[in-house]
Amino acid sequence: MHAAIKAIEYYLPPKVLTNDELVEEFPEWTSEKILEKTGIRKRHAVEGKECASDLAYFAAQKLFASSTCKPTDIDFLLLCTQSPDYLLPTSACILQERLGLSMTCGALDFNLGCSGYVYGISLAKGLIESGQAQNVLLITSETYTKYLRSKDKSVRSIFGDAAAATLIIDVKSEKPYINQTRFGTDGKGAANLIVHGGAMREPDAAVDLQMNGPEIFTFALRVVPPLVEKLLHCSNCQISDIDLFVFHQANKYMLDHLRRKLLIPKEKFYIYMEEVGNTVSSSIPIALKHAVIENKLKSGDSVMLVGFGVGYSWAGMIAKML
Image (cartoon, rainbow, N blue to C red; front, top):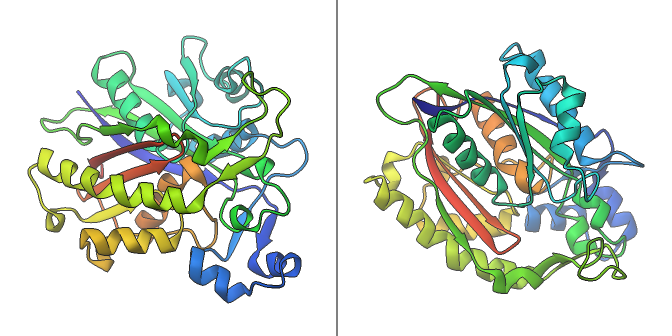
């Protein structure tokens, strides 16, 4: 018994913030400059009381509507979010009822950002290959725009809201479809991407996202290349053996630096963020979905997934397309 990624769908809230609209607020910029630096032309944002569980619900409904599976097929729900509806209960429990999943279905939230999708696939793999589940619904959903200050142009140009729903199933095969994950953590970097308010440590602090961009950039250049090398070594393969590399879609400037440092051919390195922005834990599944749509990934192809960011936290794996 092995775990495999069966299908991916995603949902974007209707409200759109374009580069032209940002330039109206920050006239020292131009739309072209924002696109050149970030690789982003527009991003989506929730409005009013719309929350992460709402985006998650619509992403899951798209998955069910695709006839890939039914709600009653799901026996475990994993929800990755850093913007839950409530401190308690878990948003996954709310979603279980709203989606009509079985009451024998396990459900939990886990709080991870940019590395969360890779972590989630690894958790699903463990549940399936240990015989505890057969069909795992992994949802990544984030509403970072609720944390952004209106005057902070750097983060407002980058982050967008989105949710992605991924079905991970058990398959009968001799070889695994998902190789072992390699993880990394460095809590010394916690203060470089943080929301101080909204929880117990600093109850009176503002619920605003604070990001030290240069430190995040340095961190990524430090940890991602060794992670990629470790993944290749553990799988006994080379860059030429991987059909596509899909990294967390942080920003184009950072991704271009990483690609060049790793000597990955441009045609093997997939970027999809121009129309959606940095959607945190949903950035990898959204990119994966479009890579399949554009025929960049086909059944039997090998893809390396690498997530890195807030925490600091990072994780990577090599998977084969079902």
